Image (cartoon, rainbow, N blue to C red; front, side):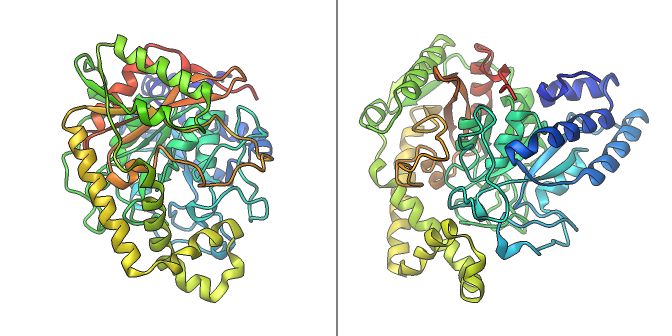
Amino acid sequence: MTADLHDLTIAALGARIAERSLSPVDLTETYLARIAALNDRLYAFVRVMADEARADARAADAEIRAGRRRGPLHGIPLGLKDLFDTAGVPTTGCSRAYLDRVPAADAVVVTKLHEAGAIVIGKLTMHELATGAPDPDGPFPPARNPWDVDRMPSGSSSGSASAVAAGLCAGALGSDTGGSIRGPASWCGIVGHKPTYGLVSRRGVMPLSWTQDHVGPMTHTAEDAAIVLQAIAGYDPADDGSAEAPIPDYRAALGESVAGLTIGVPRAYLESLGDLHPETLAAFWAAVDDLRSLGLTVAEIDLPYAEHLDTIGTGILVTEAYSFHDAGFRERLHDYGRPFWTRVIRGALWSAADYALVTRARGRFCRAVGEIMDRVDAIAMPTSLTPAERFDDTSIVPYSRPSFTRMFNLTGQPSLSLPCGFTDGGLPVGLMLSGRPFEDTTVLTLAHAYEQSHDWYRRRPSL
């Protein structure tokens, strides 16, 4: 068995499986062995589904040998953030309040992954119920960043990012309500794609804020993200937020030229932020120069209402989250972790007038960004203010600093983070590219073109 299988992309693994130089059974055993060796350091998995994965790998192997290969995900082991329902397997949201929760059916996206032939290898650590902060008193230890286990992988899709970056699975699904796919992707040096709102069903996914929740892939490359998105995208009439939109061939579009596209950059806004880490900013400007060298036009833009976006997004989030957890708080508040309930319970203090106010403000922002997108094909920004922070840094107050990611949950635009460099200390830095609604192909194609100009995506942490 090849020692570096766990470092390969989904595309490369799929090609080997297709030519039958690699068996899904051997690949699954490679990942299970690596999980056994490293999860006690990284805490990326809360539940390894070894028996189910082995059975699915044997079935995939038999199908492929019989000439019935389903596509590039057939026989590929993937992980799931522990808020995706899995039939007969606990889905807890990493919360004591839901430790006994065993869904009767798979989430729609899990069903789609199975239909594509993917192998679900386990459930991944997250911040409790998709918000809050790393909680050392929670039912599961917080996930660690594989580039430095004393640092956070960000949240809430913390285990998903850690597992992919460390080679514990070939890819994973995460959820993103304010940046929970892209932030962890940035801090762990992988690709995280938040698709357009409504493109991917959320039925069977534990909700946080139904007007901002998104489901998307976390992978090593933009090509891998396109492969996973192809499998999970599609209209779901039982998801109120789902949209009937054409599903293009995302992977095929990656070969298109990006020359002539226009990228918007909010220079004045970025340079006004005192909290923006200098190495993050330097890596970002270098990435902008690289995009320009690929034939893109770079245009400076102003971000309207930027100073109010965190208030708007947080107000909507806590109000919607509280409405969902109200009964649970009344019945068993002590079962929820303090970082979660102290944040969400603020929703009880928001009036209908308050919610209407931030919803109207959201509408104004969306219209303003729509006018910007009439002039540019995508917006480029750093993904995070800083590289990965230490667990013991008491100066960090979660959600107290500006978020670059949240604005695109408010607008519902496709938004992707990919590596654009490393700090002098060896920590990844993320570049965020965000496009027009339902133009996920543009975002993925831009990311793929940028990747090919650097080897950032090839780097792996030493563990």
